[in-house]
Amino acid sequence: MIESNIKNLSVEKIMQKIKEEVAKRKNSLTQGERQPKPAVSQSTEQVMMNLCHEHINVVDIGVEIFQQKEVYEYADFTKYHDVEFIRNCYRGLLKREADTAGLNHYLFKLRSGQLSKSEIVSILRYSKEGKVKNVKLLGSKKRYIITMLNRIPAVGYFFKLFTTLLTLPRLTKRLNEYENYTYQLYMKNIDNEVKLQNAVNNTFQGSFVNLNAFVNTKADKTELQTLSNELQTEIDTKADKTELQTLSNEFQTEIDTKADKTELQTLSNEFQTEIDTKADKTELQTLSNELQTEIDTKADKINLNLKETFTEKPNSFLDFAIQRYGKSIEEEKKLNEDDLYYLLFENVFYDHFAVKEKQKIYLPYIEENKSMLPWLDIGCGRGEFLDILNTRNIKSEGIEINTIEFNMLKEKGYIVSNEDAVSFLKNTSKTFRGISALQVVEHLEYGYLKEMLKLAYSKIEQNGIIILETINPRNELGLANFYMDETHKRPLPAEMMVFLLEWIGFKNIKIVYSALLPENFRNTQINLNYHDYAVIGYK
Image 1 (cartoon, rainbow, N blue to C red):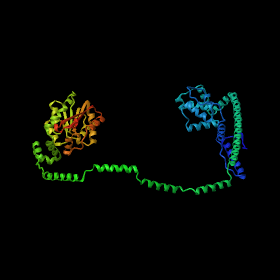
Image 2: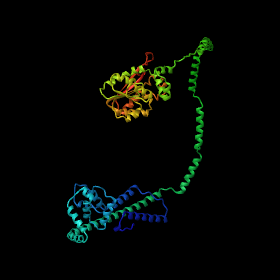
Image 3: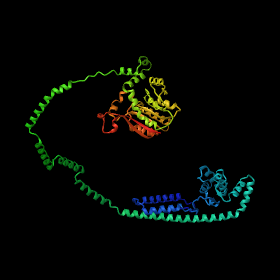
Image 4: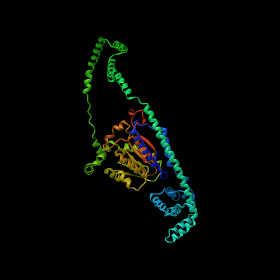
């Protein structure tokens, strides 16, 4: 039987007693006949767990879970005890969980008797944080004043003594209630311990019964040995599993090497059909002779074609470029060789008048906006587009990094800046009705191009436009000539340029194809037949 002390009953002590009893019974079993330990049935273990659980929860103070309210009374807090009392004061009065320092502080004050529950409630309500929360607590002002008076040295002692005498009848009533309450808990604990002891006894009794039944079902050792010998004899007469598997594999290999009779017949028929379709050897020889005669008659013609060549002496492109330049190049070459080289290259391969004529197609897009702001042409080169805008009385200015072309445009009276586009757009405070870059973007690194277009967007007025013209990489002739200009970086497909403008913020984007090829060069897909294209976007 488990020894117990009801007054000091706890779950830990109960479990310790159970362990001691189990060890005692195990020792007694060891001294007698050794038997295997039976498993405790599921239902018995469940009964023990339920009883332990019931025992742990015997203290039922009958107080509901703390409820948040708009208006509180002191009893809403004082009906709780110890840690739960402090936590509920924080929840109700400060609208938060108690921090560790505050919980420990007030718990010490409460347990040591330095502060009563009523005093702790009043102090928290009129703390700095409690005043901010301003929770309505009935009778709190009067009780807070009493609490503060109690804490005044000397005077507080006599005042507290006076209030204690006044509340003595109520205190006596509470002591009587507490005595009855603790007696109730005491009796309930006794009842639970009796139940637990009975459950333990029943469990051990059932275990011994199960153990005895388990032993009775076991076979005698001599019978087991006899059965083992019989089984071993039976096993020895059987073929080894590994040998059977090896033999099976050998049979399967032999079977796999044999051709199926039906397959052989089918193959025979196919060979016969193939033989029937073959030409007679005499017919093949006749055909071979005819082919050889045909080859012999073609030999002379083939030899003539192999020897035939074509030699062409090109015109002097440099002489033609210098002639168009109309000045001596010696001094200019010493000063700025790279800029002079590109100017002469343009004079040969980009006809000034043809370029000027083609760029007129963009005038309708510019003139639909009646703004009085100037137009900016990036990479204005020899000034073809500035000439077109000037003839229509459209104010304009240009950007050109080629020093020679810049000086030529300045002599003509145009407003031109000799710097790169990004630097100009970063530094200028002007706003433009629109910006163009005609046959320029293919000369730029892609990162630089994106930065230039972002800056251009910021400098164009609302509803202004941007025009970017370049070579159409879908056109075979345009793509074939793309790298004739050594300053070209990469072909730019129209779809990619549309996406870039959309990303930056331009709307209503159009693709305008220009420079239609002669009819004998055209393709059935229309956009492949134009040498150039431009993307036009609106801000």
